[in-house]
Length: 211
Image 1 (cartoon, rainbow, N blue to C red):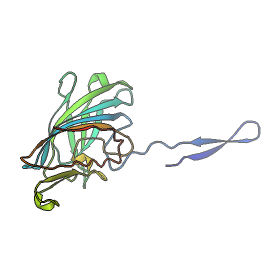
Image 2 (tube, rainbow, N blue to C red):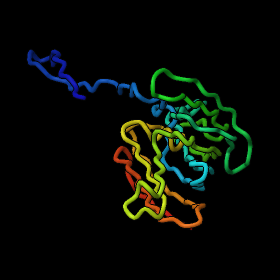
Image 3 (tube, rainbow, N blue to C red):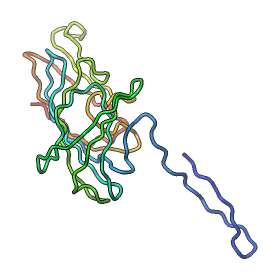
Image 4 (cartoon, helix red, strand yellow):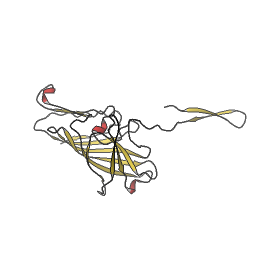
């Protein structure tokens, strides 16, 4: 996105130019309100169940207030079973709402921010407990027959271009970068698993732990 030059009278008979930067344009493919509240870090702890083809657990989102009076952080979510949303430090339940969007965009998830996160520059951590759908567009579960060895199942994630929201409630937009940390528990009698996090839209500063 480029700016424009505005010409004005310098006052001494000459001409001066001022470079004007246009205002930020909202991402039409995301419900994120990053100009008001921005997610800066994600910490996920999820259990993978090959029998139900679901991931279950929680994500901790560190939210930064980008403006005074911030009341909500808006996230993208798609086909996620939401259990609860709390402020991590106090355990206090946080109100949230879901607004179904047209097409493949999923839902707009609006989470009420605690009072401590209403002033510009303040931050808080919200914890969202949820499960993914067996038909998630961002996760693929392959049976042994579809693998080269033919013995073990295979799980991988892919988040291009707007499929991260089907994996985790997040601000699914390339306009902001997010650090993240992932902890996975794997339930399968015998398995070989490779988790591919294709998050080219986000800065990867991750440590993935398998236990």
